[in-house]
Image 1 (tube, rainbow, N blue to C red):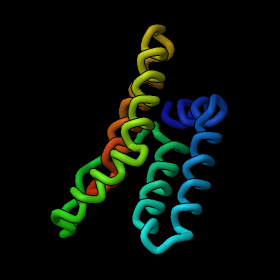
Image 2 (image 1 turned 180 degrees about the vertical axis):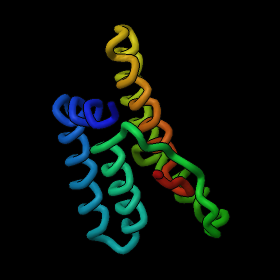
Image 3 (image 1 turned 30 degrees about the vertical axis):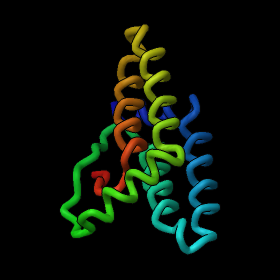
Length: 122
């Protein structure tokens, strides 16, 4: 069932959204300061490609307060906007019964796009 959900997700916009995150990640990686943020874009793009059957878990990395600072910078520079976009799509998809599984995936993506540092995808 996950395969079918992922296939429908890809056809209905997941591939284009992942492409946007990949291009953004490459642009961010052009600068030394943007490399950590570019890596997070690649992480979100991988979840954007195949969201069904995967989940987000907190990592036990030793980044400490650096993770918090990077999350705040991410939030100010576009994380809040992308999280709100995922929230709007989740609300629109939740209107129909068929769209509820896809709405749940948008909520999962909202969690990751809001504050991606300190989280891993399994």
